[in-house]
Image (cartoon, rainbow, N blue to C red; front, top):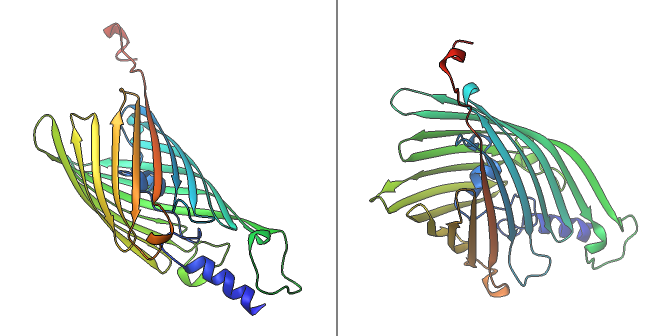
Amino acid sequence: MRKFILLIMFSCLIGNNAFSQTDLIYSNLNMNRFAFNPAAIENNGAINARLAVRQQWIGFPDAPNVQFINVSDFFDPSNMGIGLSVSNQSAGAEMQQLIKASYTYHIYFKGGHQLNLGVGAGVLFRKLDFSKLKLQENEEGIPVSDERQTLSDFEFGIEYHYKGLRAGIASNHITTPTKKATIFRIPIQNHLYASYLFVVNKEISIEPGLAYHRGGPISTIDISTDFFLRNVINIGIKYRTSTSFIIRAGIHINKTFEIDYAYDLGAGSLRNYNSGSHEFVLIAHFHKKLNVLNTPRFIDK
């Protein structure tokens, strides 16, 4: 039984973003904001939808992968927005699904300052399929099928905007401190990020960024630079400490749809055992029709 317990502990702790004891970190521009920070809900006059698919460590057996769907809307007169997200993440014998609702309230200050406050709550489903584990010993009392747990899940976040500056902080799975984490209870995940958009001219903008992610005992730092061409094409590079070099690109197909892609070239100890990670994101902005008064006689009603 001792070897079995050590095997479970090892599978939960090795490597960054491995074996879904920590949430997978996205590589595409700003995806982490919408996946992990409820305060990131946009006020852009549209219903926004995002579909992300990430396959980590191509060629590595039972490598982590995640699928993520998010839909959000903002109600301008009330300065508030709501969102709904569904994510599915698996790695080897572990699988988790999270369904959560998000709420944000935007506070606008004089001079162009904006502060977004966000909270989220949902249901987290975790499963460990023991039939996929290869044990060195056959011992009685070890499950041969799977075990499941369903838990409540909570998060909060803050985001600040001023001119080209955007900064945010968010925490997920906030009810589980790192010391109380188990196979079924994910430890608290913390995120801190900032970026600044420099407008060079009407055709070119540059946005350097810095982000810090910590899940349980594992932490990473992202250093990135993104370039925007005519607000149609964007390309970027990123370095994630001890983990990967990342190149990414995106294109606005039209006013509604945008496609982004990122490729992670491994830089850590597993770089010789896989051919990198792939991530695709499809974004849709369904612009809402504005209510227009055809005659001034209804203005006071």
